[in-house]
Length: 164
Image 1 (cartoon, helix red, strand yellow):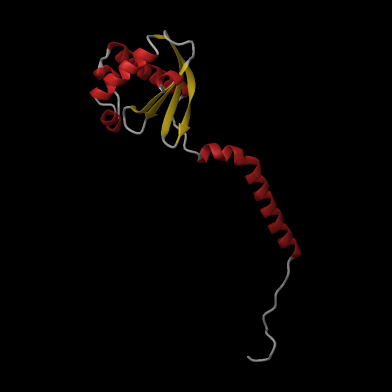
Image 2 (cartoon, one colour):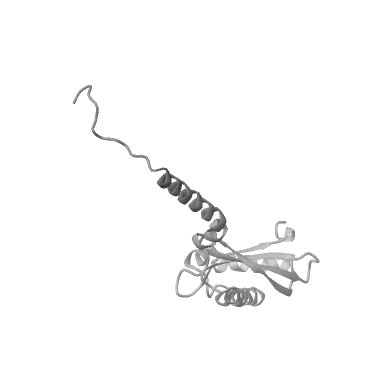
């Protein structure tokens, strides 16, 4: 058909349009209201209770610090990942022991501060006191819970005395 009229007609239903518009508006409002809660659901968080993270982190840190104090590499690195063991071999471990002993001294106190999640890792924070400094040392312990047994994937001691 050229130039003619079509038998097809559009029927408008104002009530249906109102209902569709209301449905869209209601959906948008629900998204806005529940978006803070959805972020927690969608964000990758460990399915591990806080007290379990504290327990594991504290046990790992105790073992690491006792290993440093006694210069016992096996105790220090017992739960290290393969990458950590490669980065912290026995030679590097002994250098670390000398640096901590020379700059910081003996461990006097250790306090668990909490943790945060970064990608798939759990990073626990500790405040430590040592005999040769009045300043506290921040220790970051990175744990990987992906495998059946948690592994230490990172360890940092943050102190101006260690940077000298």
